[in-house]
Amino acid sequence: MVRKTVYTLAIIVLQMGEEKVVFAQAKLEASVQYTTELQSDLGNRLNWVNLLSLRVAIPTERLGLWSNGKLEVQTISVYKTSRERIAGDRQVFSNIEEDNLPFSPFLLGYSQQIGKVLLFGGLRNVNEDYFTTPYTSLFTNSSCGIYPTLSANYVLANYPLSAVCLHLEYRINEMIGIKNSLYNGQAYLPFKQGSSVFAVSPQRDGLMDIAEMDYTTNSSYHGSYNLGIVVHGGNRCCDAADDSLAPEQASAETTSEKHRKVNYTCWLSVEQECWHSGRYSAGVLGQYSFAPSDRNDCRRYMAAGGIFKGLFSASGEDTLGVVFSQASFSDIREKALEITWNYTVSNHFSVQPAFHFIRTGNERSHIAMLRVMVEY
Image (cartoon, rainbow, N blue to C red; front, side, top):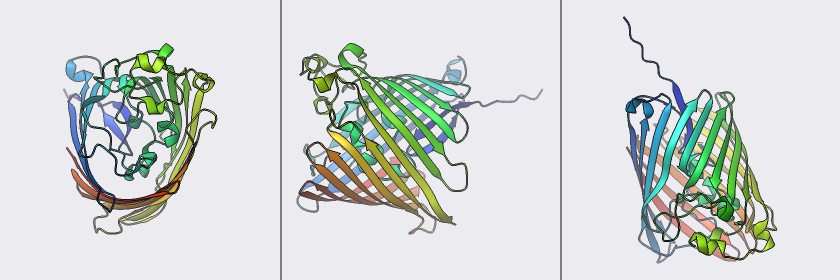
């Protein structure tokens, strides 16, 4: 008798900017990713930033249970040598720099595939599902990964924070998909007195819903188009600067009219490969996002850039990127230009220098950085 092993499609996820198909095999999946980054303001200020990520996924089949399910755990640790940032930019030129955090649960929950639908419940963060695409994931500026119209206006589950979430994905076909995530209205740091990363309190924090439709071109030229909206209901709008407060302190804050309004942010992102020949390719990207000016600190964000692959290595494993972004805040406008180059030395190792030219109002900053990534 011939025994056949049938592998069923378990989950389609957006990770490190590439859509990957993961099959529910009855084996444990584990990965370790270490990112280290040296920053300089081209003067006297230096900073060394480190991020360690550990991730494990256990298929329910391995536990002798039903198929197409997974228990997922990811933790992160952050360490930097300088308590103060070396630049005062609002968009934050490094997407891994945060205050020192010895340990934090970044992802903790259960996912189940049912036909074309993926369901997840537990701790989650928006970086897992939104904003990072194959082109934008190259850049180190935080705005490319999550727009300041969100990060500056909400205390949402954005790196390094997570929050309790119910997440759903549905693939209409190979090209079109929809996602929806319902989060507790505010994310909290773990192990902090008076707060809990596991908090679920709609009355105190409100609720936050994120929805997005994506279209991926099914041709020889890569293309990704995303349209999304965030809606926050409750009394915690415009408190993004207060994420360090304990819940009882936060709930006792001012109850001005803008804090009671339902808040929302919309965005559109486009990236399209325009040309390729052998190892060479080139493409463009664009991003736009807006939020109501009567209840938000950051009202508008836009970015445009280009990607060029295979210019400097015979293997084609290098990518050069240039992106210009502008964010309009209630009191100031910030413009930023990033030029970066990533070289994949092997499947486990890559290096990436980057240069940032930033103008925040009348203040100018010039940043050089070198990032190294190791993954197993």
